[in-house]
Length: 122
Image (tube, rainbow, N blue to C red; front, top):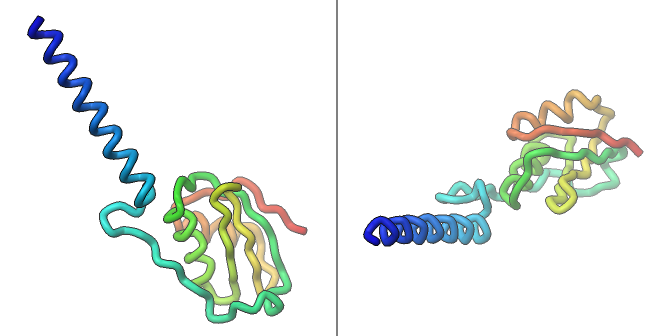
């Protein structure tokens, strides 16, 4: 009987820990906990008419809005780039002022800690 009570208490503690962790992820994002939330970076030039080249990239590894902000910020901090990430589609629209190769785009995403699975050019 005592062993059953101990097992039930352990299960309750585990369930509570999972619920607390889940609530934290929902409210703060998986990688925005502990004040590590990514603040949005706006590029110096926000006129899309100045960015004649564009592509869509599919990104692996994004799980929350902070992941998306980190990738978007990496591009928007880089001269000649303007990006908008779509977390629901695990993709990003990348606009550039000059032609760039797929390797450069993949490198920027990799520096943010994620992986490009596909580059789609129009």
